Length: 357
Ligand SMILES: [Ca+2]
Ligand SMILES: [Ca+2]
Image (cartoon, protein in one colour):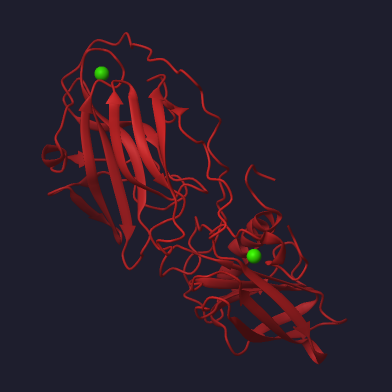
């Protein structure tokens, strides 16, 4: 199991890997879009206290200090965004904005500073990316530099998205070689009362490798369990001939949105979705095509309320043996993106009829 990953997460990641191969073969009424590697990167690496700036010995190149206005007119190729699918192609920015393949990338802040202590300034930039129609904003903080030729490049990354670091609303540079980032536990889709923020500091350690040139040097390295996070639970009642009803409960004080349900039935030819379920996609299980897996979404469930959904499995033999799991998906209009994230659930043991936790 990866650090910070619950048993449910691990189960879902495996299920998603199954579906990655399964769904293109099946495609029953879903969007027909790409499916799902469940990316649950662990919490940040432990802080390296007192990380020091290591001056580089490279000959100084041209000055790379930009204002927000001048950086916003450059061609820039953002680095990897962490757990999201935002573009890493070269983007032509105009007025701080660039669009690419359904995404809009915006430069929110630009702070000129001598990051690596070589006497020449670079620019620390906060990039934000939003998929069309999505409420989620993906961020990264990176250092923009110039090559000797004068070409502007995004060279070093300070911090990007992680499993429990889903937004970066603000940065500041308290001194040369250190970048502070205000990070958010969840993306902007969550109710504002649930969302929590932390300031974390990242110190430049080495320019020798383009990624992770910074180590966290101060501030908390993770978010503690969030008692306000939305707790969903599910229970299953199996009837005759493969008929099933599942009841999903929202035990929180917020409306639960973007809910998905995953169903695995042993020795089943198919599973059909009944009332309460929509946008389903599914197919034979990857490791054994005798079994069947189905993903669906449900409507929102208000605080303290329940929703009962129905399903029917077409069984080859026996009585099914069903695993049903509920969770929440933050990534906007695409039901199962290739780097999908799941919102943490403060009580994971009730998210499956098997009582994982
Ligand atoms: Ca420098
Ligand atoms: Ca739960």
